[in-house]
Length: 434
Picture 1 (cartoon, rainbow, N blue to C red):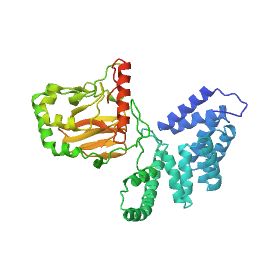
Picture 2 (picture 1 turned 135 degrees about the vertical axis):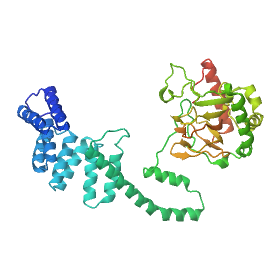
Picture 3 (picture 1 turned 90 degrees about the vertical axis):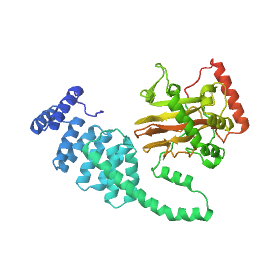
Picture 4 (picture 1 turned 120 degrees about the vertical axis):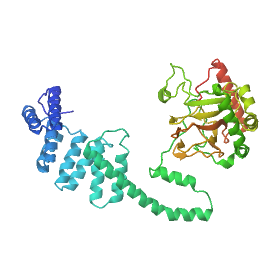
C-alpha cells in the first residue's frame, strides 16, 4: 500500500499483528482483539490499514462519525486505494451525507471501475433516491463482477442477493414494455421473431452469446447458429422415418456385439486431458463406429444395413483420413459429457435420438433441448455444448457429420483438398475429433 507518511513502518510486522487481531475477533475474543489493535494503533497511528480496521470497528459499533474520521485519515495517507474510498463512502452515507458519499464512490471507481463494494453502494444510492432504473443498471455491472465460485463476506453477499432481486424486477418491467410493440411488428410482418428474441435476451443478460470456437479449423464469415433450422435438411425426413429400423439395428448390436462398443474419448496420457479426465478410455460414453476418420467399419455397416444406406445417401463430409464420422453414441446412466467444442465449423453434427429416457438433456450455447426419439437436429459443434443422462438407464443416439450448408460447392471441395494436403504434410496425424 502506498504512503505519504515519512515514518518507515515494518509493514510485515504491522500486517501480521493486524491479522492476529482479526483472528481473535473471528474467534469471538473481542477483548483480546481490541487490545491487539489498540497496541498496534500506538505503534503505527497513521498506517492506513490500521486506520481502516479501526474505522470498520467503529462502523460495526454504530459510530459512523468516528469511523468517517478514521477512514478520511486513511485515504489522506493512501489516496489510491479504492477500498478505502468505498469505506469513506459507507461512513458518509450512514451520516446521511449522500452527495459526499457519492463523490467518494466516484473516486473509488475511478481507481478501480469494477470495485464490487463501490458499485453496490453506488447502485444503492440511486435506489434510495428513487432512481430505480439507474440503480438496476449499476447493480447489473456489479453482478458482472461476481464470479460463480467467489466467496463473499456476509454483508456483501446480502447486497449481491438484493442486487439480483432489483435487476430481475427491472428486467421483468422492461420485458413487459417490449412485449406488445414487438408482437405488433411480428404479426404485421408474419415473420419468425426467434433471432430478435435471442438478441434481446443477450442484451438483457438473460442469455449468453457463445462464439464459434473450433479446436482446429475456423472458416470465416459463416453464420454462428446453435441449432440450425430443421427445414434446411429435408433429407433428414428419411432418417426420421426409419427411426424404428435404425433403433432395431442398434439394439441388435448392443445385444450381440458389445465388444464393438469402444470408449469415445481415447486421448493419450501425454495429451492435455482437461475436462476429459473422467471419461478418457471409459465406456460410460461409448461409440459403435460405422465410419471413423473417413475409415469404414465393414462388419459394423453390415450389421446395420438400413443405417448404412441412409448414410451413403446423406451429404456427409468425405475427406481422406478425416471424414465421414458416423456412430451410435451410448451415454451411460448418471453420466455427463462436459462442455466442449468441436474441430471445425465447416461441418455440422447431426443427432438422431433413438433411446432417450427421462432426465436427458443437451445444451448448445445458450439453448437447452431435450432429445425426442425420431426427431433429428443439426447443430454447430464448435459452439460450446454439453450433454447429460441423469436417468438410471443408457441413452443412445445416431451421430454423423455433414457439410455446413452455408459453404458453396467450390468451398467444400477446396476445404477437402486443403485438409487432405494438411494431413499428408504431417504424416496423417489427425487432430482430436472431440
